[in-house]
Amino acid sequence: MNLTYLTTEGLSERIHYDQRTIRERLKDSVLIEGVHYMAGVSTNADEVAAGSTKTELARVEHE
Image (cartoon, rainbow, N blue to C red; front, top):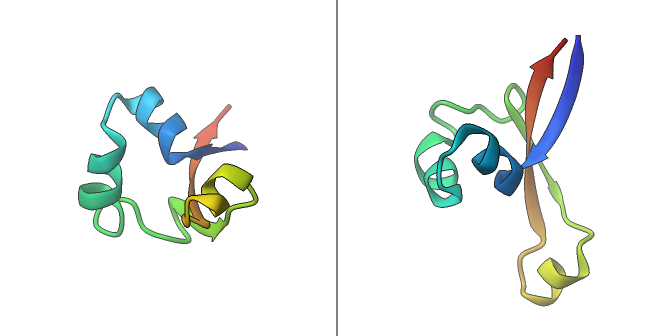
């Protein structure tokens, strides 16, 4: 089993849901931290400058 980690933006593109819907409706109800995604600290300079230092990565299983 191979795993791919996607940002919320990448998951949004893949499953055709708005990023806001993923964050507000699916996260922690359908998508469970530690099972379906992991939260981490962003190293993206633009996100840090904007005050958003937390990034969630969705885990996608594939063959």
